[in-house]
Amino acid sequence: MIPFLDLTRQHVALKHDLMAAAERVLDSSQFVLGAEGGALEAELAQLCGARHAIGVGSGTDALRLALTALGVGRGDEVLTPAFSFVASATTIAMAGATPVFVDVEPDTLTMDAEAAARALTPRTKVIMPVHLYGHPAAIDRLSAFARERGLALLEDNAQAIGATWGDRPLGGWGDAACLSFYPTKNLGACGDAGMVLTTRDDVADRIRRLRHHGDTGRYHHVELGYCTRLDEVQAAWLRVKLRRLGEWTDRRRHIAARYHAGLAGLPLRLPVERPGARHVYHLFTVRHAQRDALAKRLADDGVGTAVHYPRAVPDQPLFAADGERRWPEAHRAAREVLSLPCFPEMTEAEVDGVIAAVRRACESIG
Ligand SMILES: *Cc1c(COP(=O)(O)O)cnc(C)c1O
Image (cartoon, rainbow, N blue to C red):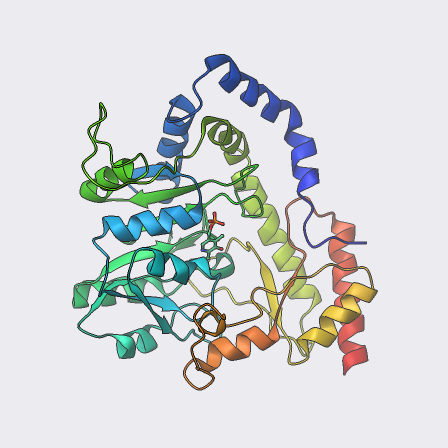
């Protein structure tokens, strides 16, 4: 059996350091908004090229608070890709605004800049591209577009920590960005955690207050805030793991290179890495016209896979838009995508095993 993902391997290797970090926090008796969180914020601001980083309870809360801090509310529209994890769109609704779905580019499955231009209305306030699977959206074009049209740019960087475009890290291109430390992400907590990155002082101040009951200090509450902070145990654990992120990313890229070499020539669409982009392969997602048959063959052969994602976001019952014609690339992706195992602790033999199994499966499907 080759699992799609096995976090146990990562935690076995780090167990001693993780337990020591938890003990440090326990001994300090400071569990919320303390030294570990502050240190993690500084380390991640630097990694992502942002001036400020503010730890919050999840990636979802990071997006929701960032939208509010950018002034988004009722009556506003936010452009979001029609193909992503659902939180890229639900957070817009949580902030009181309307998600406007934009189709994606066929090769990277990230927001199509021309489709974004067509979706613009006088109510559009923010453009929110997603760096899907760990590959940058066309962030240079999208940030130029945002500047020209006077829109704020919010990067959903939940899947692409450490990725770059033209040597510039993602997360520092726009007015704000989110990170997610959901356990399966490239830098994963042992629970829920997230972060907002921003270069704007006003946005950083607002988010610090929104995450903590709208408090400006000493029980002085100036607006309706939330209770969503990144706790100290998670921060301490994330700092332990952050020291390994570079080598883990190299390992993901190595596995991806082996897949690219070993799966060449099959009737599969392999992920692309645009010139100028550095992909961090949160997911290695291939496309096949008979995706379900391929997944079944691989499962029978002992290889775990997953579908990210089986529906275009506007097709989720929650949104229930009738859009088969409006987002053709997103619909097609939802039918064809299949993610193969790609995590740093995979062995070379497992990588070989996946390649052999995919080759066999493609032959038998024809
Ligand atoms: C994981 C994820 C989120 C939400 O992050 P959570 O920490 O799970 O709340 C948002 N957007 C994308 C693209 C994600 O993959």
